[in-house]
Length: 364
Ligand SMILES: Cc1cc2nc3c(=O)[nH]c(=O)nc-3n(C[C@H](O)[C@H](O)[C@H](O)COP(=O)(O)O)c2cc1C
Image 1 (spheres, helix red, strand yellow):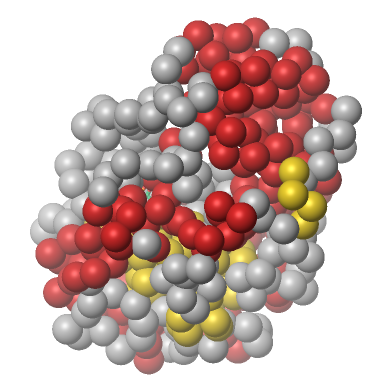
Image 2 (cartoon, rainbow, N blue to C red; image 1 turned 180 degrees about the vertical axis):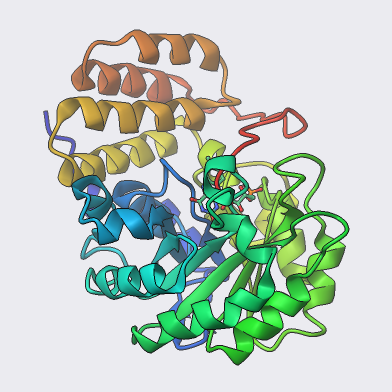
């Protein structure tokens, strides 16, 4: 079964017209296609999802977190994760680890796979990562940061960025100090998720805190956290002092979030023009990129079905669709059920309850 890209390599006219609102921006030495960047997400930001999101207006993307030790041991599965597709335009690889030598060695290998930049994960709250001193634990003992940054910088040519949290906990909100060290050690830009490590994913991202950092920043700053719907993203875009914004979970239930947010007039109407057949175009693109990337049918099925179920969220009968998808036997059936569902939606509107908790754990 082959689902070609429905409009050849080109986007449909509707998607293209939305893309026209994307204005390129420069962060450090890199020209991103728009101010909205897809945030790294473990288990999600692989090649197919990253290409799809660039198609749909993301100015750049970041891989999921990849272990420096896995790279240095030559672990085959880890090395697979470093791969980049020629269609990817502005992709970064995110590394996690703790000691400068291992991170520097891994960064040389990662760079040889051809990303536009490398990023250090300094936000992961997961116990397994922080007990070894990686992820958000890097924000605890900041005297170790300059040697880490400098060692990595000395072994690579492309830009190096960091993704941090506001601090370890509410009594150690040290993002500004981390940003200062970063700027002095050759870090090109900083992305910040507006929560502490202790908060994990609870409460709300602290946007006042993020905006205040713009007063002291010495490098470009990318704000992140709870930008879940186009209206909210567009409002933030208009008032933020940040150089760019990052979106993670919002792209899972609404793959059009980048395109919809980039047009302020459209976003203010809070009504989507993207209907079931637009979603079907997205699913076909996803199928195309996923089958191009992975060879095992089981892997392709697992990748596609979790995304189509998220994409259906908020449309009528999404729960029934979800149970059909999760009981289907193979990829062909999954695509048939998806085609029937999305094309059968006609002009039905999507209503997502943004107050409901959605994915409250992750690696950053
Ligand atoms: C499933 C999932 C996986 C994540 N994986 C990573 C990761 O690998 N690296 C990272 O820096 N952040 C990771 N994050 C954090 C996101 O990049 C982002 O900072 C966070 O979700 C807040 O943004 P949002 O409100 O737009 O989702 C992950 C988040 C989720 C939900």
